Structures are given as structure tokens and as C-alpha cells.
Image (cartoon, rainbow, N blue to C red; front, side, top):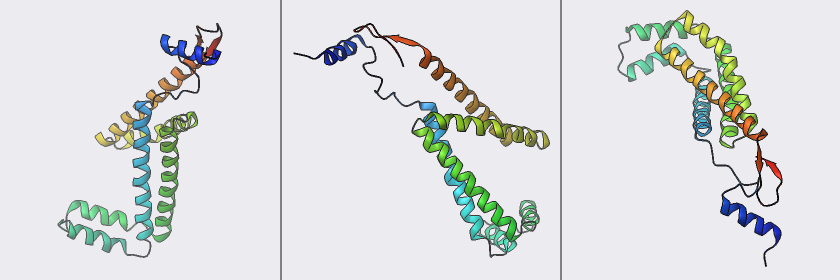
Length: 190
């Protein structure tokens, strides 16, 4: 003989209604992709931070020349000359700042990525807030020096922003929507 809970669960499963609120929802593919992108970004910026710290006690101009010759670039190349001019502006203190800033950004991206992969609502809001906060800077940089790369970054971030807003609205709407439970007549929220 079945208990009332077992009978109700079997009836709900037969009808196709959610049996219990504890059942795990299937993973959202968009959140998975955004989370993986954030994790890749975290690894990239961690490596940049390691590289910055590794270069602390080295002559950056010599390192640029060494890399340029190993990649078979002409030392008189315009790009190499531009890099050498920019590298001369970086001192040890600035290199430490760059390293620590990239480590901090890496930790933030790691937090976002792990939270999104674990489907945490706080991570969705964190990603939404951070994406919004970087938009003015991206727009300024695009207006100052337009390029396809900057435009692409802006479009990607606007797409992420749109998706997160849509997802959070959908979740809020479905959480407030009552679902009838056929067996005991009670209304439940999802």
C-alpha cells in the first residue's frame, strides 16, 4: 500500500507536473557559456599577472627585443618600435600595480564564473552589475579610438547584459507564477 506522499508523487509524475520543488532544474546553456567565458578570462588575467610579476626585476626593453627576434620580427619594425616606446613608460612600481590589478580582476572573474556555473542568482546579479559598470568606459574607448575589436567587445557585453536581464526577469516572473498541484489542490510556486 502506498503512502499519500508516494501516491501523490506518482500521480504528478504521470501527469508531468513538477513532483517536488527540490528537483534540480536543468542547466541554462547561456549561463554555462558566460560562466566558461569568465573562467577563461580569469585564467588569462592570472597569467598576465604572473607575467607582470615575473618581469619586475628585468629590463622590459631587452625582453621586448628578445621576444621580437625570437618571433623573427625586424627590430626596426613599426610595431616593435611602438612597443619599445610604450614599455619605456613602465617602471617597477607601475608593473606591480598592473600585476595586482590583473590578479584582482582574475579573482573577480573566477568568482563570477564559478557562481554562474553553479547557477547562483547572486552571480547573475554580480555579472550584471559589473557588465553595466564597464559599459561607460567601453563607450568612451570606442569613441576615442574606434576599432572593430572594441566594437566587438561592446557588442558581446551588450549581448551578455541583455541575456542576463532577460533571464532574471524570466526567473522573477516564473517564481511569482502559481502552479496548481492536481492531487492535493494546493497552489505552489516554482
